Image (cartoon, rainbow, N blue to C red; front, side, top):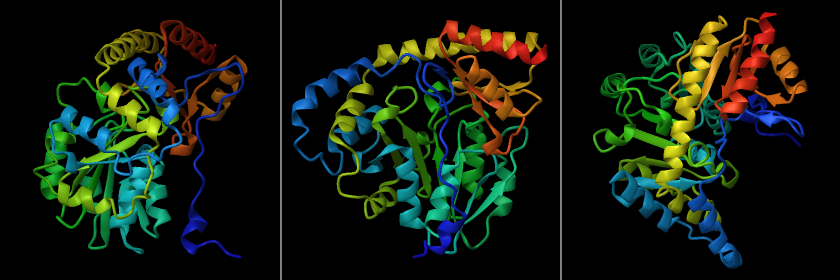
Length: 351
């Protein structure tokens, strides 16, 4: 028995590792836990688990439409952003066509392309940022999809509003840009703007987001895409009947309304960045200023060794060797106590 030829080059995803008793700050999860409004919605639905969920996630999609002031037919929900990427590739990528993305970014873009027989072309980051000109130069008549993470994982860098618009103006109409905004809610830079404001102007733009990060619902697996209705509605052809479970649908709709939780999360992240930036600079560590809820830091040594050392002392961070950044780590911004302990551990690398 042989697996499909296209899967021979696919490496299974490796999540951030930890161990029992360690503080996990490796997966960009919300240190405050889940949205309280989402938890209340889950509690209310527990007695309905014998029912199949709504196959189109209608309640959730209506809540998203109201939240973003777009028509409901601009949205599709999925079992995390990971499934959304696969649905997009399954809908628009023919075997043998190309996917273009960066070399140091989220691995699921590569996975989705390879899964459906695509050829993935990777363009190097420039100073930790996606290179719009490099991406455009890599596009050929065989290119079907381009993936850009904005802000990027793992560097936390971003492309400005003008850069995204300029890219879209030069992108061939036959190529779809998938703009992954998993961390967009954390972005506070004046030059950052969401692709949400562009989807009706560019019918080949899809914007993806997740409930895993700012809403603290990573364990429920809930993501979505928004775009022009003509583009989005075709993706339903690739979707399984009941891909988003009942609890996730209800929790997501309520989480969107949890303004107090969002405020607390953003303040925790902002305060953490202020402390960490200062401490990193004082101790001579290079890092990328981040528009996400994590910081990418150069440690000038094998990141796996740093990971092992930190884990032995009770903290899990993310070594970035799998991203092609062997001397870099990614740290999820945590509580004040966690951030101080991280800096304490980091200082030992200079001793």
